[in-house]
Length: 263
Image (cartoon, rainbow, N blue to C red; front, side, top):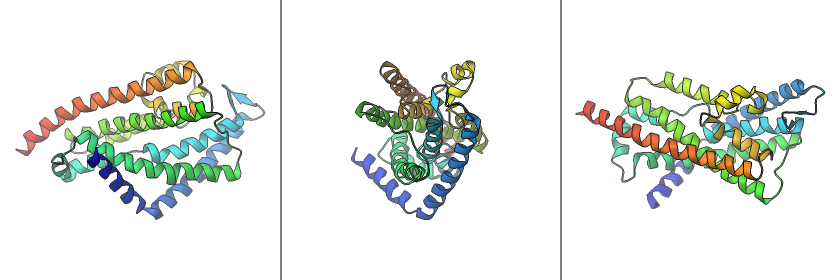
């Protein structure tokens, strides 16, 4: 575990060096977040509530999704893919840590920095200009913390799995763009899943994507409480475990192919 945490700290220090990029990303996310909030307010019109969400909840939703962009790398993550194409994968595999855990440690450091510098910061800036919904009570805060952590695990498992396509093709970025684009829609990032028809909601819940974004939002807004909250956390945990197992199986097959081609 010591090596795991050392790699996490290394990733934290590396991520903190990109201060200008972090600030630029924060301001961009804030601009588009407020723009989305204005659009949603226009869609609400005179209605005070849609699908159990008030106008204030909808505005908060835009802030939460913008805050999740960097934390979950929801627009795409190709670091592992690049390491395969540059040959860095050979050195990474020699490290005394499993390949999945190696990338997990690095991504944890990156996500922690993003959560503070891009996630919490954007919510604080939001609070300066609009009224945000705030979780009520210790149970909701604890549920939010658990949902937030599990959402990162699910996101990492999905991103790791998508990047493994690089073991089979000389350019897997197209696969990545399709995979990450699917996550944008089915996770509830573009629009709350509650706003969609029931058939689309049922379809999205057959995938791991709602566990990345939608569950965190609904826990934060208090839309999931009691047994529903526990069930949502259990689903997140199940998807995280299933993706980790699938990553292990696909990685094993990919490494076998890598050894064959490398001689």
